[in-house]
Image 1 (spheres, rainbow, N blue to C red):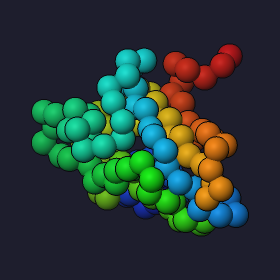
Image 2 (tube, one colour; image 1 turned 90 degrees about the vertical axis):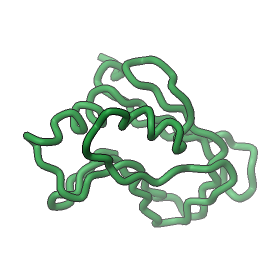
Image 3 (cartoon, rainbow, N blue to C red; image 1 turned 180 degrees about the vertical axis):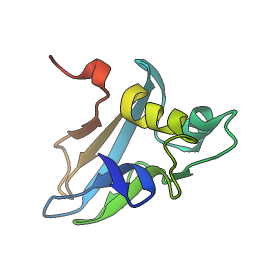
Length: 122
């Protein structure tokens, strides 16, 4: 989910379920090309060559996201539309993030997806 909170802007993951969600894996695409999982290596690819580096939270397999927990996946605290247009284009138009998870009972293979406009069904 894209989010604005004052000047904090970016992507956040919210567990709105009744229990913990156990992350099993993630897939990140930029412009339709898979570049990896939501980890530090992928973060470095996304921010390479930028003078400003957004803050990041990684998602490791087996880590729970508790009920009601908000995880800020990628964000800037002091977002400025003019100075950070590249960031807004990345998170709102170019980036697709899939997060696969299960309940504490396991076996469901649920999926949450941030879909950019180029993937949205018409």
